[in-house]
Every structure is written in structure tokens, then in C-alpha cells.
Image 1: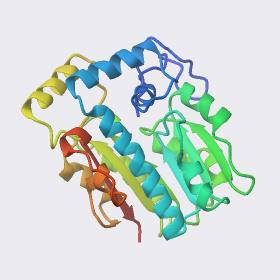
Image 2 (image 1 turned 45 degrees about the vertical axis):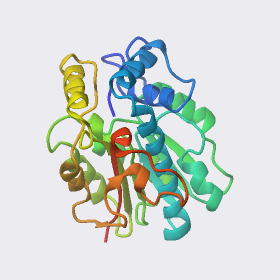
Image 3 (image 1 turned 90 degrees about the vertical axis):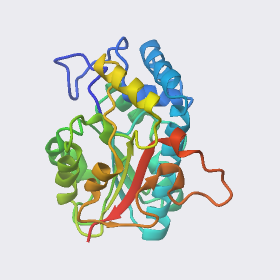
Image 4 (image 1 turned 135 degrees about the horizontal axis):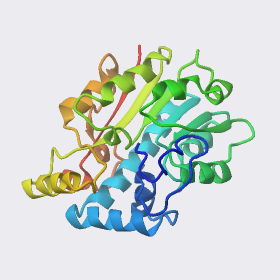
Amino acid sequence: MSKVGVMPGHEGRHAIIDSSVPHPARRYNYWLGGKDNFAADRASADEFEQRFPGVRIGARSNRAMLQRATRFLTAEVGLRQFLDIGTGLPTADNTHEVAQRIAPDTRVVYVDNDPLVMTHARALLTSTAEGRTAYIEADLRDPDAILRDPVLRETLDMTRPVALMLVAVLHFIPGDGAAAPIVRRLLDALPAGSYLVATHATLDFAPPAHREAHESLRAAGRSDVWPRGRDEFATVFDGLEVLPPGIVPVSEWRAEPGEPVPDRVNVSVWGGVGRKD
């Protein structure tokens, strides 16, 4: 999650939208075929896609894993509470829609730091009568602000298991070793029986030219993505029981039978699901 796209000094609930600065949520929306993005977001997305032709495939594979993981946790595990941080702009089959289709009484709290995301979420992400959805405008880099927000505890029973969804958001936390402590703080607040669903961009499968291209973009300040290798990404699951098939490219996590699986070079996103005992 990045504050790119938020005017300095306006972070938080009263942030205003700067459409001249690309934001990850709006760029991702563009790759998924959405219309809630600005010219700066599309230009940034097109530059990424020019340098990394598979990025759109990766974005869609990532979204599909979120939906499969949500179905699994709702239908097979029986979870009824989700904390989805780094929500992104609403598209088809958002977390609560997938879950409430199976269990209408499911409750979901969405968190994002882009005010445009929150505006759209409040307008479009409506719950079933039996369940509930709620929204917090906050930044993953401040997990305590999320945990102490009254909306969280008004919506979720924090004494019962929760699915923590960190899908395509941890790679906006820059720095070696910087993501795992944030995840640990969030997991520490959740009871036994909770689950972590996490995905993360990687250069593990990238050819040398792609690695060099990304380093060039980052050095020029045109990439807000901090790719991590499998070993570092795996540390966010420390202390959890990682469910089969383990930490794998998102396209390979419980892939639907008969569905074609894209080349790992094009996906370039690790994913996994872990259970807290």
C-alpha cells in the first residue's frame, strides 16, 4: 500500500485525491479492466506493461487467487470474518461478495489508504442483510491505527477467527525485512484459528532484462513496488501452518481443474495461505 496519489498533509480520513499522481489501486484497476482510474494511472500501468509484458496476466491471476482463497475459507474452513487490507477499487466478485454468496452472514472490513477506493467502496460494496461490510481509511504501514479503529471492533468479533487478507499489498512496503513485522503485529491481534492470505510480487522468475528494467524504474522513482524473493516472502508465514500446496505462484494455488496455468514468468506473484494455531 502506498500513499502515492494522496496530497501531502492530507493523509487519513480527510485525504483528497491527486489525479496527477499514479496510485497502485487505480493502476491495478486498469489492469483488471476497470474504469476507475486516471490518465496518470494508465500511463504508469502502460509503462510497467511495456517493460513487463506479463503484468496484466499476473494481476488477473492474483485476483483469481483472492477469490479462490475466499471461497475455500468460507466454504471449507467455515470462516465468517475477513479483514481485507489494501482492498483496491471494487471490481467483480470482491471478497464479501464471494464469501456472502456462500454464507450470507459473513462480515468483512475493508481497509485502504486511497480516498477514491473508500468513496467507491462505501457506494458499491453493499452487504447482504444478514452480514455486514465496513470500511477503514488507513495505511498498512500503521497496523496499530487499523487495530484500534472502532469500526474494526464494531464489525468483527476479535475473539473469533478472522481471515487476514494481504493480497498484492505487501510489496508496497519498501525495505529488506520490512513487511514481516507488520504482518506479525496484525496476526498477534487475531485469535487462534485465524488465517493469513498473502500474495507478493517477485522477480524470482524474471529474466535479467526484466530485473534491470525494474531497477531502472525504481531508481528513477517510477516504481513503487518492492519485489521480494520467495525466502523473504515466506517469513510472513513464520509460526503459521502453511496450507497445501504451500507458497507457490498465485496461478498455481488450488488452480481450478482444467484451467490453463500461465507461465510463471508472466505471473511473477507468490501466494500462500497459513493458519494460526
